[in-house]
Amino acid sequence: MKRHLHLVGLNHRSAAVDVRERYALTRHCDPECWAIPRGEGVEESFILSTCNRVEVLVVGRGEKLVQHALESWATACGRQAAELSGYIYKHQDEDAVRHLFTVASSLDSLVLGEPQILGQLKEAYRQAAEGGKTGPILNRLLHKSFSVAKRVRTETAVASSAVSISYAAVELAKRIFGSMSGYTAMLVGAGEMAELAAMHLLQAGIQRIFVANRTYGRAVELARQFHGEAVAFESLFEHLVETDIVIASTGAPEAVIRAGDIRDVLKKRKHRPMFFIDIAVPRDVAPDVNSLDNVYLYDIDDLKEVVEENLASRRDEAAKARHIVSEEAGSFMHWLDQLRTQPTIVEFIQRGERIVEEELSRTLRRLGPVDGETLDALRAMASAMARKFNHDPIHFLKNGGMEGEAPLERIHLMQRMFRLGDELPLPPRRCGRKG
Image (cartoon, rainbow, N blue to C red; front, side, top):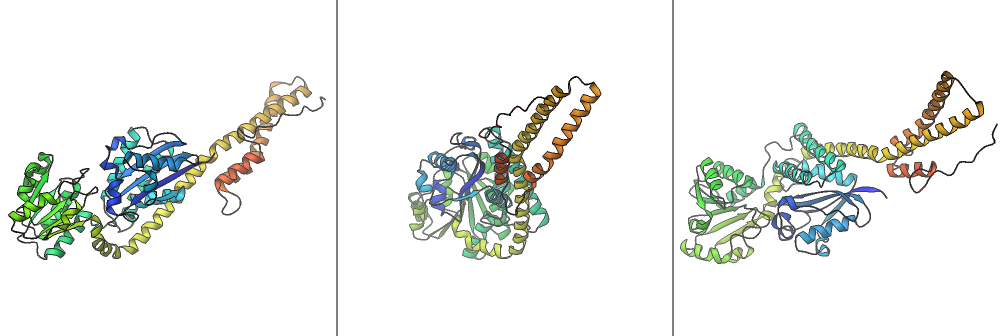
């Protein structure tokens, strides 16, 4: 049975944020637990789960392999595969390779050229490799994706002045407020996206920044870096009374800010407007917050207008990058084709060696005793003839015959033609007449 590489996933294009958060593995289990169990033909697996996508890669054999991957993913999220299947995309073999390279190169991100995805991909691969989930094919594929991303960044300007989700969030705040001078912002969460948001807020002219985080030490560290004020998570809502703009990115499994919490805050603010920009998936701010008067809530999907402006200025560079991705995908598939053909080549050569030994034995029985020099000459001649006979079939297997012919078709043709493989054993030899 043929081995295939499959990719199934969902992202910001195939599913809205409420669907993405239901199937984000970050919400349901720790990264070291992300895995597709062996079974139904699965030989290798890898999972990437970020705020905007989940990608599942599996290598193996069998018709149930993809369904097994979907069911494992859905079960980990406490859901049914039938519901998930309405939002996913599927890619196989070269299409899967091309998609992964596109993701690694940040050509499929919400913000074209953003730098975070490559780090997330490397970390997910480290977890999978340490857990023994990957094998020779995915190991090579993931390492290749890193080098493709590096080549795209080196040879194109797709990542020059790259904007992040955090940048887009601050741009949205600027559109709402105009001048940021005189306003107070709070970062809920102190990770990489919060750090980028703090930098962009300062550049936009914000005068005061609070940083709230469950790990207070991290809040202190980030606040000190950007001349802000650290806030203990327990006193979050007390400080929201003084806050005009909230950018939330905790990565918590459930919402940390709800409408009931904000009602009291609004009363103390005398109903001055508040703007929440939630860039986390799962969402940090419950949707019911948007039902309150003088509260304006934007989630990650609302940043698309900012993102589209970024994309328009980079389309030419993106086209160059996609050409690189296609070229590199073809190169990887050539390696994979060689890997697939190797067992057949080895078996074909061994078949020739076996025939050489059988025919040499038959010839020596006819000739009777011969000296060592003659024996060596006969053996060398027989081996040379076998190598020459093998050359053209092996070249055909490696490099193809008719245009568009798939490697697996050539493998099957070789197996049928020379009766290779477990299902097609060599027939018993007929004994010729003895001389």
